[in-house]
Length: 82
View: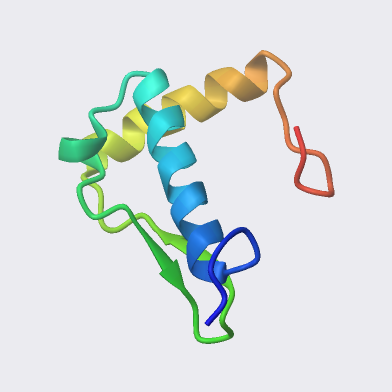
């Protein structure tokens, strides 16, 4: 069994951890507002992050953060980079 950077479970775990940190850095309480956030591997064996269900007020706060980032010129490039 593969373990390490090429393992989809490892990649998913790293992405989930980095997403949780990014959400914390902009002011979310991930343990409370994204309590279902977890790493996963989808049915095609691709790394994935499951965000779980969030409340409407958390969604509104996330909309605010993303809208402000876009207004500041922070947008994703077609390849997924910033």
